Image 1 (cartoon, each protein chain N blue to C red):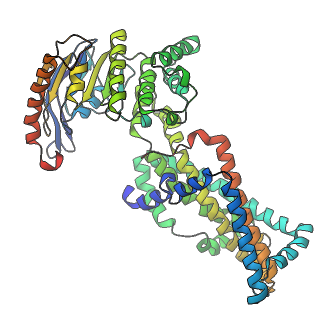
Image 2 (image 1 turned 180 degrees about the vertical axis):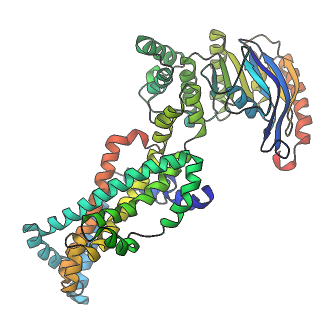
Image 3 (image 1 turned 30 degrees about the vertical axis):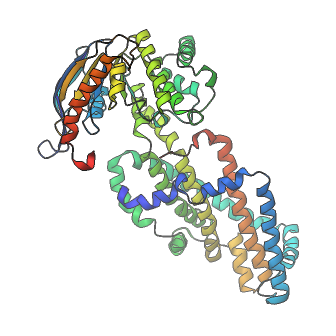
Length: 258
Length: 281
């Protein structure tokens, strides 16, 4: 269980600084798929960074299975939108996956097995000798996913991982991620500003307000059965409702941020 | 620190080098390049030959044929190789020392804010002192033996490599370091397996610039304070007004610098090729 208790985040001095997050609380169950949805600049990434342990909350705390999160760890794995810069460009596809396992001190036959298994899972087994620069954007994302899953994290923290991909690749990546999620039952916290993406993927959608002092505006449970079809009326209704909620936020945004 | 060194850093970043894209286009046309090089050389030497034979004073600008005729006995006696070898050795020793220490200092400065803040202002001032400016003091400190030459080349190398190394370390993508942290890397591992490899292209660029600068620095150093080397050959030939020997020395310097750079590039290509990913941003 991932738990956020009354988190606030202030950048700079606590009095004069920029207050990005204000009193955010949430609980995410094991195996749940949660989307953080909100306009750009609403602190979604900041919250994710706190969950990953890259940043500390100014007030409040985040805990994972009862333990306070105080730094990055393999159990909480971050996925970056720019897979190209997150990967090691001087290592081949296979070496990238192997590198994470080495860091986790997983050696020998176990290491080989996992490399095989996860390369196959993401469909990169035939590209194992290539370097990241030789892969397409979608393949690089899949490599990032394979490298992460190989060390068996419990939570996947994904920061708009597919936002830079073209629409077609993105759809395939959605199906791909859902398939992996269903098979592995990892907890997923997925940051996005794409409404359809969130309805397509999430068990629950947490809508955040525009900053400063971002908070959770509303939590919606997506009750639709998977695989979800954007053409069904319920999908559209939910979309409309979320759009309205976000509309209220964009009105608050300054003109130059819109 | 970024505000002070920004222009110099940008100039040194491989992707930001003007003319690089142009070079790549030319290079991609396999057959065209050698042909064009050949044509360029023929054009150059032919024009030179004609100009100095018919239009200009052949004493001031000896034609290539005479330069070549002068070079032959110098090659046969080994004189030119001796001087070139001595200059090259000096460059290699000074360059290696300079580059190695600059990489160590640069990596530490790029990583530790406090060290950077402490040393950056000093480096900012010192790097405007060209090796030539340092010749008089180097001679007083080290005499006219080999040490003063090593020192001057060291001096000329150090700051180029330092600034580029710092830039490379600073520009290591945050996502890469954070991803490594999630995978379980500790600070030392992040340093060794993420930051240093990410900085390699920058370091190499700095080294190539420094290499060119070393060849420029060794000549004045040898002219003013040496009994051997290509600079010394230039100096003596100049005093005796032997223009043909001056031209031989000049041609040797060009060839030596060019050959060294090519050898360096070849070596980098063979050993560090996988690290030479040009940064995308």
